[in-house]
Structure formats: C-alpha cells, structure tokens
Image 1 (cartoon, rainbow, N blue to C red):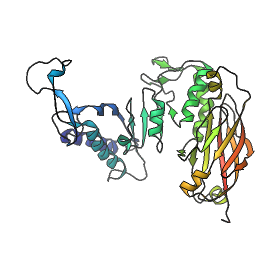
Image 2 (cartoon, rainbow, N blue to C red):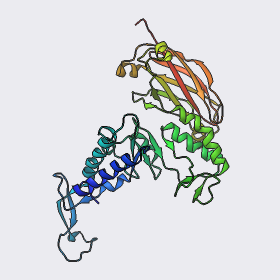
Image 3 (cartoon, rainbow, N blue to C red):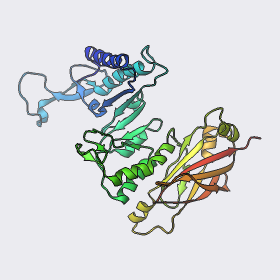
Image 4 (cartoon, rainbow, N blue to C red):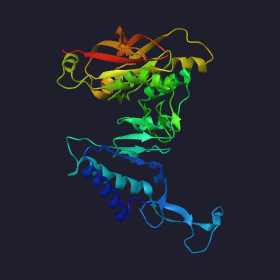
Length: 349
C-alpha cells in the first residue's frame, strides 16, 4: 500500500497519536519494513519516476514477455515513505502531543535496504536479516540494533559475534521472554529460538562493553586509528558540560572509545596463531584536530574493558611518536579490548 495516499496516511498518524494519548508510557514506534519502499504506485506520478509497467488494459499478460511492458510515470514509494515518516516524526518530537518530559523514539527496520535518505527522520534502526555493516554505517549518528534469530553454543563463534557488533557500534537484540522468531531466554521453552546458558553467559560477559559504547559517535577523520593485531574502530564520546572531568580535560576534547576486536579471527584467517596477546594501537589525532578544531593534545591516557572481567585495566600513558601520533601497547583478552582513551588539552594555547 502507498502510505502517502491521504486517507491512509491520515489514518496512520491518527493511530500513532491515539497510542500517545491513551498509553502515557508509550515509548515509540518501529516501522517494519522499509525495504517495501522499493515498490511503485502506478496510479500516481511523483514527477520524477518513469518506470516499466504492464500495459494498462483489461487483458491477461505474460509478465516474462518484455513486449507486454510499457514505460510510464509512477510514484516511488520512497517518496511516499519519506512524506509519511516526516509527519510521524513531527508527531513524536515537535507536535502538541510530544511531551518534553517523556521522550519517544521512532526506529525503522531496514531489512535488506539500508538507504541514508530514508533515515533522516528516524531516531535509530532496529533491523533484521543480519546486514551488520550496512545498518551500522546508516547509524553513524544514531543507535543501531540488529535482530538476533538464534545463536550456536560455540564459545569462539559467540566471541566473534559480539566483537563484530562492538567493532561496528551495533547492539545485538538480547533474549526476551515470549520473543517470536527471535532469541529468547534459555528457560523460555515455548519459543522457537531459546538461548542456552552459555549464550546467556556471553551476553553478560559483553554487557559492560556495550554499556561503555552508549553515546558513541564515529570519528570519521583520515585514518584515526590503526593496530598491528586485530581490527580497530574509533568513536568519540563527549564529556558532560559542567562536570569535573570536562573541566579538567578541556571542554573541546571528547573521550575516545576504541574497540580492538577479532584478533583471534584475523590470525585464524591467515592460518597462524597470534604472535602475542598484545596489540599496538596508534592514534592519529592531527586530522581530527584540524577538521574538528580540537586544541593541542598534550597527554593521552587509556584504560581497557574486557569481556567477563570486572572493572577496568589501566593501560597508562601513550607515547608520542610524531605530530599528532600517539602509540600504546594494549593487552588483549579473548582477542579483544575496548579501550577508553582520555585526552588532555594544552590549556595554555
């Protein structure tokens, strides 16, 4: 169906408004699924689309015969989805129904279609079909949740699963009671995809690492981080204004979160064992300073989180090895470390 048809679009918006009015604790909605927007409404014209369609008459046609097709105007449902979703966004965030004391969110299920322009009015994604990288890149500035159907009780495979998600700042769907065609707790025997005690233990092991990623935003400057063992990504997290940490470090410098992941997988793919459990992390902060207006960094310290381990392990200070280049040895556990980096600014500059 075309959600931009006025009578249908008004009904969708009215249904959402009714939820907010009658269920005060209603937290938001999820659109399932956005890949249906690849279709066309052949009875409308968006002024752009000109597509093949079956000849508009009352006779039967052989759809595999190209001679049965003609070209004509239509309305892309991408246009329709954007229009309807913008109205729903307004309802959630800027209308009279939007309550500033009760935040609501609108997530979408990309399915197999991750398109940036369709994400403009969403607050995040909650997508199925396991397109991890595509959905994570759409979520550069918004939360990304990936559907979990079922998992194997294999410790190595589970480590890789959670580490892949941490590397891309994507949250795996956790077991919940009564889940339908998705992962459920081990004792939820009536569901189709129950977890096992091992799977639940791995969720707990990695839970603190995912907690540490809350509020992270991709750092998209040139080659900001590299490692000699494993795979690395880098994110920024802002210190809250007015906090002691923010005042001590300089307001313009963020905290960095650096997941070093899949070191064991990288070694296995090369047919070798890792030479050690130490990965050398190099931070290239000069491009970020130039692009984002950071003050001069005069000190870099770090601590690491590991799956299944309480607390943080202090890693000490990084050594400066060039202009804007800082280097630090990072011990790995289970082939990974989630490194929290603190930058200190030159307050005299």
